[in-house]
Every structure is written in structure tokens, then in C-alpha cells.
Length: 266
Image 1 (cartoon, rainbow, N blue to C red):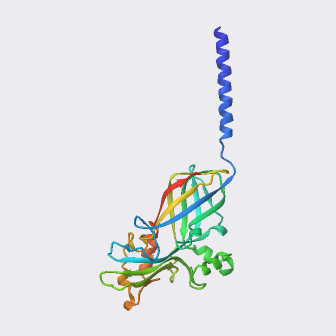
Image 2 (cartoon, one colour; image 1 turned 120 degrees about the vertical axis):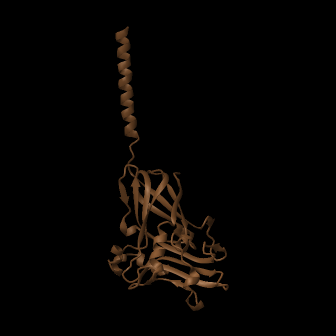
Image 3 (tube, rainbow, N blue to C red; image 1 turned 30 degrees about the horizontal axis):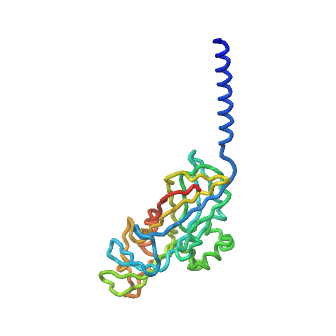
């Protein structure tokens, strides 16, 4: 009887082991899928509304924002095992435009299936890409020109365009402002951001996660570095910040402008 019981237990153990192996094989993550990355612009804690919404900075300046555009590039995804996937460089340049809803969700195709924990991206066009010359930019050059995200080919791309009108305790009439970042002289002002995902993005052949990123545009001038538009109001003609000492300060602010709010795995 004991011998029979031992034999039965041995058979059950072998069966369980085989089942376990089979399940492991079934759960291996293979193939490719897609990933959506949404950029949702806010100001402080409020959803951004162009043209009419009054947005107040810590410097007591009131902004009505008419334009927010920025270039996202060089996307790199990190899996939970630490390995990375770099999205093809030739396809990795996008313009997010608050006025154009279709630009606010990036559709990334042919992503290796896996559990992703981080996303990294650039703000602007990296110097390596720019150094390829006009013919090396592919279709993105025309896209940037059409979107008004270039000064000229020789001057280069605008990485961020932030425009509108403002008032302050010293500037009581609505006055225009324009903040454009990009290459100025020898300063290239390209920066990259790495964000942890609050939950894994589960890319599968049958699952397309959506990473929802909040972009707090208040940080452009009201981040770690505080930039007063009224101090840049050129003879009352408007605050135009496109170079000078403020630009690297604004570029540094951009690093803290983005935060992943949540991940949909639907």
C-alpha cells in the first residue's frame, strides 16, 4: 500500500512539474505590439485652455496662453529586466500642439512585447540629427516648417514655442510674450527626460497600452528657475525670450515639466 501511494505521489509530482513547464512556455512574452503616449498639457493643476483662461504664476503675472508647441524625440523604453528598446530614430520626431488634438497622442508601432517601466525622450531635435543637414531630416523638416517650429534652416528648430499675452503689477495692459527655445550661438539647449511609470505598460500583440503624461507648461517660466516676463518687456513692446541668459534657465526648467499620471493597459 505504501509502495502504491509513493508511486501515485511520484506520478502526481511529475504531472505537476510538466504542467508548470507547459504554463511557463505559454506565458513567455513574444511578438510585437503598439504603444500610445499621450501628452496632456496643464498649467499648475488646471487643464490648459488656450486664449481665454487666466493662468497666474508665482511672480504674480497673469498669462493668457495662445500657443503651446514642443518637439518630442528619441524615445527609449526600459523593460522591468533593465533592457531597453530605442524607437527607430528616423521615426522618432513629433510635434505636440495644444491646438491640434491629433498631435497629442503619439502612436508607436512595432514595439517588442514586454513589461515596460520607464520612458525617456528628448525635448527638441538632437544635434547629431541636425548635423545631418537639411537633406538628412527626412519628412520632419517640412513638418516643422509647416508647424512654425523652425526659425530658418541655418538658425535651426524651435524646440518649444510658448506664446500669449500677460499682465503684471507693473504691466497693466495686456502685452504679448513669446518664449522659444532652441540653438542659440554655441548653446544647443536640447535636453532629455526620463520618467518612471507608476505601473508597467504591458505591450502585447493584443494589448496597446497608453501612457498618460501631464505636461505642466507653467514650468517653462515658473519652475525651479523663475523668469519674470515683465523684466523682459522690451520697451513695452512685448516679452520676447529667444536667447540670452534666460534660455538655459528655461531649458533646465523643462526637465521637470513632465509627469506620468497613469497607464492604461486596455
